[in-house]
Each structure stands twice: as C-alpha cells, then as structure tokens.
Amino acid sequence: MSDRIYLDHNATTPLHPAVSDEMARVLRDVYGNPSSTHAEGAAARRVVDTAREQMAALLSVAPREVTFTAGATEANNTALLGIEGDGPVIASSVEHPSIEAPLVWLEERGRRVVRLGVDEAGLLDQDALERILEESPTLVTIIWANNETGVVQPMGEIAERVKARGVPLHVDATQAVGKAPVDLSRVPADLLSLSAHKFNGPKGIGCLVVRGDVECAPRALGGPQERRFRGGTENVAGIAGLGVAAQLAMDGLDARIPQYAGLRDRLWKGLEGAIPDLRRNGDPEAVLCNTLSVEFRGVAGDILVQSLDLEGLAVSAGAACHSGSIHPSHVLTAMGRSPEQALGCLRLSVGLGIDEAQVDRAVAIIAEQVAKVRALDAPR
Ligand SMILES: Cc1ncc(COP(=O)(O)O)c(C=O)c1O
Figure 1 (cartoon, rainbow, N blue to C red):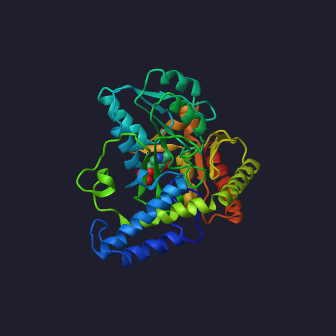
Figure 2 (figure 1 turned 90 degrees about the horizontal axis):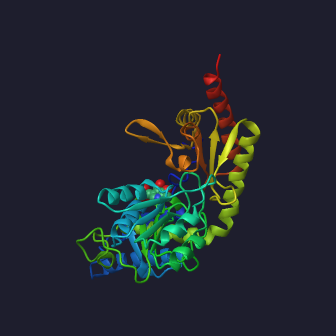
Figure 3 (figure 1 turned 120 degrees about the vertical axis):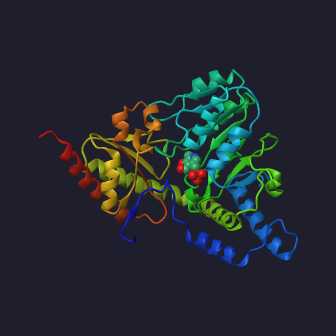
C-alpha cells in the first residue's frame, strides 16, 4: 500500500503513531475493569479519566459533560432521540445520515421535522432558522462542517440565535474537530457529537457532550458507567486512543490548519490548471482546511473513483450507494446541483502524512483519468 495516495481523510484517517502506541500499552497492560475497586480496576479508571480530561480540554467543556460512545452515529442518535418534548425538531438539509435517519424515525412517529435549506455555497438559511425558532422547537441540530463539501457553518452566529430563544442546540462536529477550532466556551451549543477516527484516533469510539442542565435520556441502560447515561463496560483502549488524539488535535491545530489548507489549495490549483470544465463546490472562504469537493463535468464520479483506485489514488464520490444503485448526494442537490452534476463530483480530503509530492502526483493521475473517461463518453 506504500505507493498509494490516500485523499479520503474525511472518510477516516490513519492512526497517529502516538495513539497506536498508547492503545497498545493499554491493551497489553491495563486490563482491569474501570468499575472494579481493586488496583487493576483503578488503573483502568485512571486511563478513562485522563482521556475524559483530554477530550474536555479540546472542547473547553467540563469532563463530567463528556460521555464516551461508540462514535458519532451513536452520539447523534442519543441526542436526537433523547431530548424530550413535542415541539418541532429543526435540522439543516445537509446533515449526515446518522442525523437524517433518526429524524425520519421521529417523523414516522408523528413528530414535525423541519429541514432548513442552504444556499448555493452550502451555507444555512439563517432567516429561515430565525422564523422557525418562533415556533418553540424542542431541538435544533446543525452539522458544523459538512462531510462531503467541507463547508463550515458560522456556528457561533447560529448558536447565539438559537440560544437567544432558549432552544437546545445539538451540533454534529464530527468533521470539524481537529480541522477547525471547536470551542464550546465561544460557541454556546448544548450538545455535541464526534468520532475519534476522523482526527487520527481509533474507529468505534467517540463522545456526546451534554452541557450543564440539559436533560437527555440515556440510550443504553444496564450499568453504572458514564453516570448511568451509557451503560456497558468501557472500551478502555479506544477511550485512551481518543484521549491522545484529542490532545494532538488541540496541540497541533494552529500549525495543521495552514498546512492542510496549503495542500488543498495546491490540489485545486493543479486540477484547475490541468483539467477543463471544473467547478468547486462550497464556499471557498468557509470550507474545512483539508477538503476539496469538485464537479468534473461530464464524468460519472463513481466510475472515476474506481479508475483512480486502480491507479493508486483513494478518493470518494459525491454520491451514495443504496441497495446497489447510485444516488446523487442530497448535500449537493440541496446546494442546487442537478442530479447529473452531483453524480460528477469527487471529494478529495488531505490529512496526516500527505505531502506536496503526493498532491502533485494525484493531480497528474486525476487529469489523466478524467481525460480518458471523457474521451470514452465523447460523441463519435
Ligand atoms: C458529519 C458526520 N457525522 C457523523 C458521522 C458518523 O461517524 P461514525 O461512523 O464514526 O459513527 C460521520 C462519519 O462519516 C460524519 O462525517
């Protein structure tokens, strides 16, 4: 795999070596159950407590406000299904499926769900938000940074608006953490979800933050763990990995943002210079430092993904596969792209280990493959 170029860091990221070292140490040496009162249990409890402090420090929240989950999907489901009330639930129209599916579940049970539109650049319609807030919703949930386009919502402004009406706000910060400042001392969100594997931590671990006096019902009963909010023996090694990843995300952020943005901009300039008929998706001023979403007119994104893969380049398409058929991304169509345009999009995302030479090679591979695919489709 060493020659391959991995530009799909929004799907998942490689483990940082400091994370895998700590996880290996915990798996090997710290085998106690954190709920046990003997020394082995206490050692495991210390690992969990340390990680909780590291996680809390990254987000500027109190450690007791952090609940470890099996990732952002569980955290999103817990937030959406755990907040009680019968008012409408408000979301954007560009949420991740782990938000969208619980919204549909609520709708099927009679709840009113309102999905707010976004503009061509992917930014939330805040006038519509302001209007719907007059209807006393039970919860507002907004994705902080979009997984497909990288568009970052002005979450400070959104949170201030929602807070001013006393409505709880949940943010899905899964893509934002580690790539943008996510500081809840500045953004007054009440609930926040994330997943460690999006910022060089392990898969299958994440957390839900529930702030202050917000009431959220538990989703997993059956043990004293996580203040009885999420029963079940803790994934101690995963939690340790999450803690180290959180520490690294915090320590390196100021250097990482310009570094990733430099690589992303080099990628875009290279592609623009080498391939005609491209369009960039999302507001370039409000996009994650690592993400580039591009429409290659007249090219089927899923075919391009496969041909790039054969050439050693991993990227993803602006489409989702459901039951064997390809559907255009709901995120891109919400931004006004036609289904054909959405199907011609690729998401390229840089991250740990990517350098300029790899970016330049990726540009050359993409240019060659796009020319081939377009030549095949050109009228003869
Ligand atoms: C914005 C967003 N939310 C939630 C998730 C779900 O994360 P996980 O699969 O780790 O539970 C993802 C993963 O792609 C994501 O990008």
